[in-house]
Length: 172
Image (cartoon, rainbow, N blue to C red; front, top):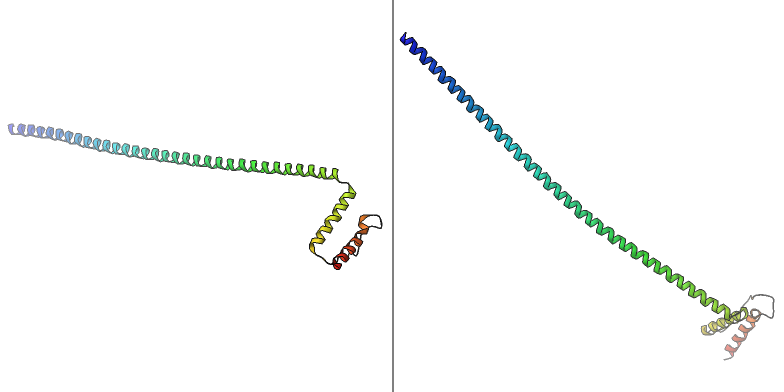
């Protein structure tokens, strides 16, 4: 009995030691599992932070790019606006110059019209034609058709004047 008791006590101690050992192993396994999960979670958090930092930097770069593009577009639009304003100003200057020219031309035309009546203008026209033909050095001018039946007008004597001028040149 003593031997049985010792055996029972030994078995109980061994069982107790096994249980204690099993508990310690289970605790160690649980501790290792917890540490692994904690490490895994820490790595996941670190990875997510890095991804978030990367996205934040990427977004900052995109914002900077958009701001640069916006500044460039604003500068381009300002340049186009200045060019358009300059073009409009030039067009207005040209229009003003045209109007000034037309006004000056009209004034001069009115001045000429006041100084000359119909007869003086016809005489000036005939004199101008005579000067032109004299400068050309034409030896003979013949007019086959002349204006009007009125023998008193200057236009009716034009063929005679031309014939006389041709005769005078050929005589020289």
